[in-house]
Length: 400
Image (cartoon, rainbow, N blue to C red; front, side, top):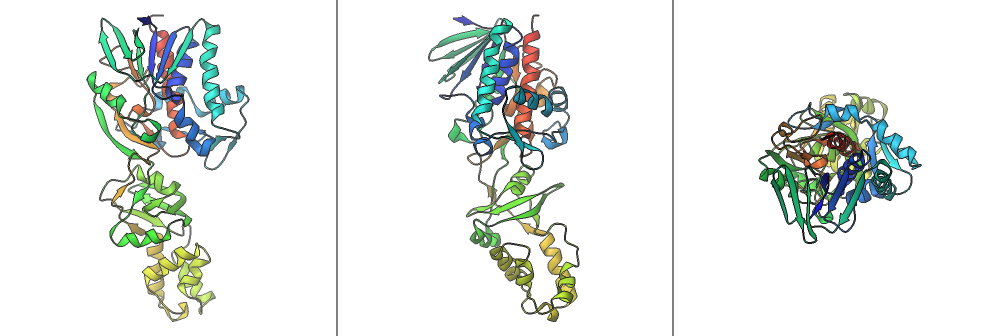
C-alpha cells in the first residue's frame, strides 16, 4: 500500500490547484483522475480558450443555500491573485466582456500551468503524483486514515479531498460520485440541478422555435435576477448568455421575462408614430431587431397597418409587452447541456475557512462538488481556485 499525506480525487481545476498548493508546502499528494487526461473541462471552456476568472468576482454573484459561505475563500484568493499566477507563467490574456478573462491562445496553457505548479512542489520538499485512468472502486475510512482503492492498487492518506465536480456535461465523464461519497460519510446534499443551461419551450411558446439561430441583445429576468446579454432562439427553446444566467434562478412553473429592447423609453412607439406615421410596427422593430424576430413579434402583437392609424394606447401596450414578454419554459436541456451544477455538498457540513468537513476530520470538499455556483463568465473557475487554495493551505497545515 502506498502512503501519502493527501489524496485528491479529481484532476480538474480545483483538484490540480489544491494539489499544487499542498505540494508546494511540503506535502506528498496523490491526484487520482478517472479520465485519460486531467483538466478536460478546462480544455473545452471558453470555446477552447478558457474563461479562467472574472475581475468582477464578488460573493453576490454566487448561488448557495448559505450565500455567505463563499466569502471567506473568495476574499483570501482573488481574481487578481489568479491573474498574477497566469502572468507569472507568461500566458497572454484578454478581457472579453463583463470582466471575463480568456487566454489569447489555448486553454491548454492553463492546464500546463497547473501541471507546472504541481511539479514545482519537488523544489519545496513536497511531491505531487498525478495518475489518470483511475476509477475509484472503494474509499474506506478507519483509524484516522482514508484508503482509496482503484484497479491499480490501494493508497492511503490521513486526508482526502473530494474534487470530482458535479454531474454536468456527462459526456466529459462527469457524474454524481462526489455526492455518493459524501453521503457515505454522512454529509448532507443540497438537491443538484442543472445550471447555466438552455431552457425548452412548449405550448404557445413553441412557435418561437421557428426562430432557431436568431440572436438579439436583451434583458432576461427571472424573479429578482436580471441579466442584459444576448438571447438565442434554438430548435428546442431559449439559450444564449442571458438565458443561461437566468436558468440558475428558474424553477419549473416560473416565467422568464424578456425585454427585447432594453433601455427604450415606455412611449418609444408613440414617438415613432409621430416621426414615421406611415411605417408599420414590423418595420420599426426591424430597425432594432433581427428581421425574423421583428416579424414574429409584430405578428404576435397583432397591430396591423400604419402606425399613424393606431391609437397611442395600443402602441403603449405593445411597448410594454415588448419590454416584458413572458415565456413559460417547460423544462431545461438538463445536465447534458448544463455548464455547471447547482446544489451539491451542503456548505453547512463544511468549514468556510478550510473546506474541511466538520464531522469528518481530514475530509475536504472543493469546487463544483460544493453547493456554491457562480454566474456565467469565469466565476465558477474562480470558486474552484479559491476553494482549492483554502483547502490546500489547510491540508499543508495539518500536523505542521
